[in-house]
Amino acid sequence: APKSIIAPSILSADFADLGAECSRTMEQGADWLHVDIMDGHFVPNITFGPPVVAKIRKHVERPTESHGRGTFDCHMMIAEPKKWVKEFKSAGCDLYCFHYEAAINSTAAESPEAKSDLKTSPRELIRYIHEQGMLAGIAIKPATKVDVLFDVLDSHDKAERPDMVLVMTVEPGFGGQKFMASELPKVQELRKRYPGLNIEVDGGLGPATIDQAADAGANVIVAGSAVFGAKDPAEVISRLRDAVDK
Ligand code: DX5
Ligand code: ZN
Image (cartoon, helix red, strand yellow):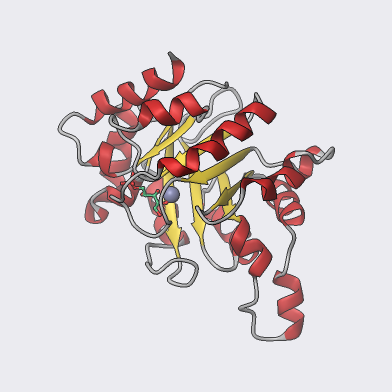
């Protein structure tokens, strides 16, 4: 499996002090920042949008060609993922991870013309994200079968293939929920089929659950409450890393 990428979720950070919280978690050993974008439609919660992402971008050094440190991993829990690609690129997003369920159900546009413009297949959306100069991720909720991801992952056209898949290990919407081990067979199957794929897990990850997730084959680890709620966040980050790289 590819090497560990630890991505603390700033959903559990102090929103009133977000810049400092982000630079601190990078100093504590984080590779990426996991940025949870919620629109109150796709999930029953609202977080923040492009202006906030642009502000915190100034507090974290950008990734370069040679290393991915500082990647803004934007987890787009929004009903209209295509609509926001350019805005999040401008705000400083590096990896735009949309939900499969949102891409195939995109219906919220007012006019028929706008609607057809927003409706998009996962392949088209990945291509569009790449054209805008970002990495592309595709996420699935617990109720979604892993098989739906094979179409894009098996594409012969690199522009249509995701750079990462995200297997949710909680119902998206809130931090601090209980880890769902029931989702790990999805990770196992993906790892078996795609040995080099970046497989991210998100929800309920921490010292108590990391070993199961790492053994299943996950290498990109999101952790919100376990990192930001810890007495020693650096220790938790290295613990997560060691479990993946062992
Ligand atoms: C939940 C978010 C997660 C959340 C994880 O919808 O996608 O990124 O922050 O929080 P923890 O690690 O506390 O479960
Ligand atoms: Zn997330």
